[in-house]
Length: 463
Image 1: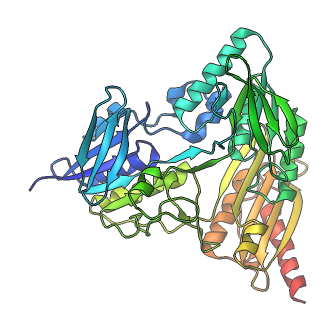
Image 2: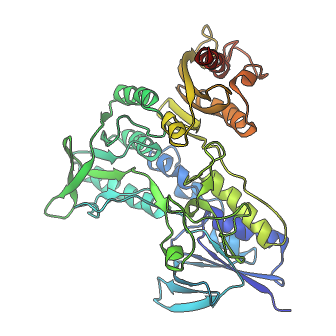
Image 3: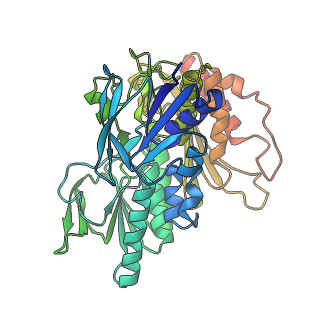
């Protein structure tokens, strides 16, 4: 019998993890694998781009986990700089365009994996496509930004960076620009930085940015970007004022790259991502799978789908898809929404629901916020740490945790992520046997202190 053909659209985390796992389970005589990647790189860490731009990671290639040559050495026909421009679901074929030669051709498939990722949000405003305005989604984007920074450095003129957006990408890029010696302004249309946190916790991030010398302007929706005679960006105009910029970095966030799938009639959810079942198979299509930043995933706490662009999820999706395509079995049950970041020595973490998320799904809740230190208070290096906890009214079921603090704070959120996944109550959390020694924690870990205070809030609300 002739080998089946698997076609993979997208050569980064989800796509190549799927291809590699399928190859482990089936050899080339049983499964031919053809993968298309429109960019110059495969299997790289997009999450590492801000740290490469900031100089913490010295070389671009340090972010690449596996090169095209390594994939081809595993009998995967990986075609670089080749973009899939059309998907014919009924005919089980894709149309690809070789960006180097201009050649366009059709390739048939027995099984298809869509891993087209996400694209930076770039509002349709005047000047958004001007020279000097950069997204940071791909290695190509990162290289273009570094080239702009080098041109400014060698030119010897002002070095002013405006970061549009104050989410994870925005605050990480603010740090990167600081490290490159730029005067940094962050413009943010929200009430506080880090809209993934409640506003009271976002205020702590704002204060920390101020302390670093970053100018943070909230309630400042961008209306246009002004350009000079050479077509380069010169100023960012917002509802709150105009800010000079020699370089503009877009940190507004990303949205699923599903134009190809939409055009083919595949189902998408309320957030624009492809809808899949637990096996990561596209709903209603037996031979098509999707994973990574182009899909929506089930939020195990809220009971709804959401779009979360994270490499951890993408790699897990790829493993599940590859197992199923290769004749094995795997599922991806969902997420609790865990994420961590930092700006200089400030660490930021969240998991589960914010207050507005809980309200949106009809949950009644209580909250508790505590201040502690990430080490025993008497131990050298002890620094402040704030923990906010949200629990369901009456039942005490944990709904979410947010943490803002200094070194050693953020990864504590993993305790809460496990508790959320297990459906624990805050009272059950108070008995967790967490590790203790003065260099790592006070006698009562801050997460447990927050749990105890939240238990009291639950009991007080029920009285």
